[in-house]
Image 1: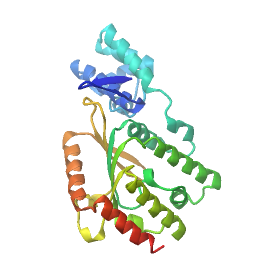
Image 2 (image 1 turned 180 degrees about the horizontal axis):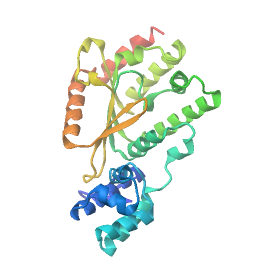
Image 3 (image 1 turned 90 degrees about the vertical axis):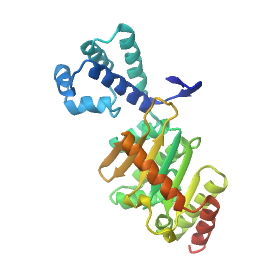
Image 4 (image 1 turned 90 degrees about the horizontal axis):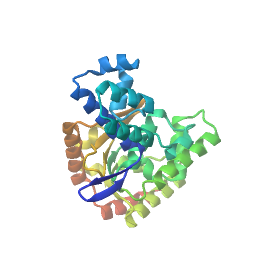
Length: 288
């Protein structure tokens, strides 16, 4: 799918397509003055399932799109467009070949992240996945899954590396708490390799990585890590992703986006500049 906005043509992936489809279906429903409860009963579908479809969280079968368009009285042209969009939204994503080591809820985020043009993030506990080395990835995976064997750990590394390759052309600004790069994950040699990798990423300008030093004291992002995804199409809503052990939460309301953007901007003002971050990482590397 290619959308044109402000004279710029942008190719979008299945994650954003699902969100566009969901928003269009929701507008059709609201135009008819119908509730999700009423529609889900007519569809013989659970109400939460319909809500997830409208929020772009679930893919939707073509026959369901057709039935919804019938219920909403959509025109033939609109029905055709939405059916085509539903077919495109079910394209196989790169992450599907790693279904043995990726959680269902993270698949949703992976599809959206792949569509994002710009990513802003704050991480407090560990080096963000998009910058982790294989040794670091393996150590983090084993800490979370002590029962897993070598094959599963290797698959986790492959998944993370595949994700990293698909983010190379993104604009990424990452704020990383100093504690995350001082925490010894996987041993001294793994951490030395990880710190050197972060320095290399910064110096090659592959991403804007900034360390939030302990000396900064209290800061706006102390409530926890988050990722802010910004999409290239002006009609597509940006979102904030917050993850926990059991799943991920998404915030898309304008007030939520404004709040997290403000948090990020204020935290950014206290973080070290890239060259200062390199200097601190160099000192930390000397300790390993």
